[in-house]
Length: 227
Ligand code: CA
Image (cartoon, rainbow, N blue to C red; front, side):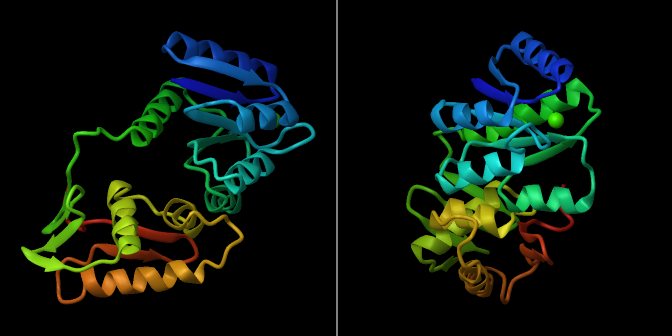
């Protein structure tokens, strides 16, 4: 597993590189935005750890150019900024996780492992289940409470994404890039319409409701009352 760190603070960069190397990862370290962007666009990484405030090209710009180029590599933002606005901006641009400095290395490592696991779903997986909803990934069939639900191919992909990332609020930009192969600037109304249709098929007439709206942030699949 190969990780790129883009961090201009020398001590933090060295510390991360050493810690992640000792944890068994192959690690590249870029100390400014231009080098980081170049490596991110040309290298084959499983995960990026991106500082936001960087000389010459900030972390947001790097993430934006990556997503616009259709690169879906998981990105963990690491930053001293901790306002809610910054968090939302990072997630809307398609960041997968966000950590505020100072951080504990153990927590960073746990999040890195989670992001990498998510990127590598086991190939033997054939079904996704939540409450009485079941997705048959091989036959591309959906049932709820044993009743067959007819979905279009896009609706199926959308539901699969939501279920795989259960409990997480997914920004429209992320849904757009993963299901429609659109970039961040595209019209996100398409997603709202698709969610409405999906919800009508999957949630109407059933309890509990599984697809939830987080105003101003995105959509989330969850089974209230379980876990
Ligand atoms: Ca910095």
